[in-house]
Length: 577
Image (tube, rainbow, N blue to C red):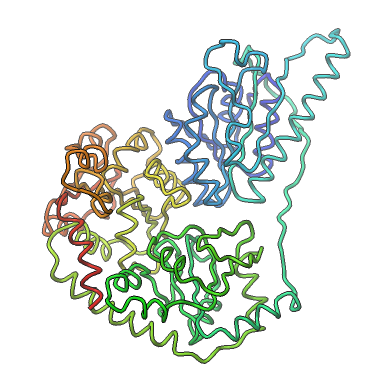
C-alpha cells in the first residue's frame, strides 16, 4: 500500500481508519496531496472526488446523515476551506458528524503574501465542536540530524496524534463537525511503501446520562397535575423513539402531540400538520378564546429545529407554565420560557419518567382531536376545488412516492407545502433545517442517495435547485436518485410574506424572477428529463417517474408564479369555517 512520505499525513489517515471513518470526500488541490495519496490508496477507504467544495461538504453531510457515522472532507489551502462553512453550520445545528481536514501552509508562510493562503487556524470557531491545529513536520532522512531537531519533531508528532484523536472522538461522541488543520512543507507528492503506521490512539467515550426516581419525582407531580400538556417534536431521525412511548402519550387524554413531516414519528392520534391546526385560528374572530383553550400548562419538546413559524408565534404569545426539553446535548429557548433541560436521550428519559406518571382526566385532547377531524374534512374540500398550483401539485405528488423511500425537501416553500399533507408512514423524511438555507439541499440529497439502496427523492423549488446545481457535477450519482423541481420562475416563498408583490423591486430583488429551465442541466449531467405544466401532465409524468432506470431522473413541474400565494393564503381562511 502507498503512503505519503510526510508522517502527519500518515497519522491522520491511520486514525480515521481506526475510528471507523471509511468514506472520504476529496476536492482537488496540490497542498492536500499528502492526504489525498493516503486516503485514495488505503484499502479500507472509499474516496469520492467532488470539485466544488460547497457541494462536497453537503454531499458528505448527506452521507453522514444516512450512515450515522462521521464522513471526512479533504481540501487544499486557502478559500477552498471557506466553502465548507455552510455545511459545517448545518452539521453543527443538526448534530451530524463531519470531519473537515484541511491542508495549510506552515505558520511562517501565513500573512506574508504567499499564494492560496489565508488564516485557517480556528476559522470555524463559532460553529465547530473541536479545532485541531497541527504542527508542520519535516521529513527527516539523515540520521546525523541534530538531536534537538529530532526531539522537536518527536514532540510535534505526539502533539499532532493527540489532537487528531481528540477531534475525531468529539465528532463521534457529540455528533457534530470538527476541523483538523494540517500544515505541510513541500515536497508534497513523495511516497513510501510497506511502512508501519502506529499512531497514538485515544478511544472515544460515549457518555449516558440517567435520572433517578428522586430526581424525577417532583417533575412527575407537575406532569400528573397538568390538565393540558402539549408535546412538540422537531426534526428527528426515523425510528428515533420507541413506539410504546408514543402510544403512552397518545392514550393520555390530557396530552396532544404535535409533529412535523421531518419528525419521522407516526401515531394515528398525533397532530401531524401543525400549521393546519394553528393557521385557521389566526383567522378566526374568536382567536383569543381558541388560543387560550390551546395554551398548554406544560410543554414538552424533543428533536431538533421546528419548521412551523405559526407554532412559534403562538407559544411565544401564550407561554406555558413549564417548558421542558429532552436532549443529550442542547436545549434551545425557542419559546422564551424554557425552565428544564433533561440532558439525556428521549428513550432513556421516557423509560425512567413514565413509571412515575399517570393519565390525567381532561377534555384537552378530546376537544382538539375533534378540531383536527374537522380540519381534515375542510382540507379535503379545499383541495378538491383549488386550481392548478404548487399546492395542487404537492397533493398529486404525495400518494405517488414509493413506500420506504427517502425524501429530502428543499427549504422555503417546499418543506412548508409538505407540512400540510399526511405522508406515507414508511417514508424517511429530511430537510436541512439546522440553518434552513437553500444552499446544499440537492447536494445533501445526492449524498444520501449514494449511501442508501432505497429510492431517494429530492423535492425542491427552482431557486434552491439552480443555486445548488453543481451538486450534479460528479460521477457518484446513482440511478435510484430522483428530483422534482417546482419551477414557478422565482422565489415563491416571498409572495406569501407581507410586502408589495407587484413592484419592480419586489420581483427583481426579493422574488428574483427568471426564465431558467432544468433541461440543459439534465442534458449536461445525463439525467433523464421529464416536464409537466398541468394537472394532467403532472399525473401522467408521475406514473412512470419512479420506475427503475439506468439513469437518475428529474421532473420539472412548471406552476403559475402569481397564483400560488393566493391559493396557499386562502387555504387558512377556508379552514377556519
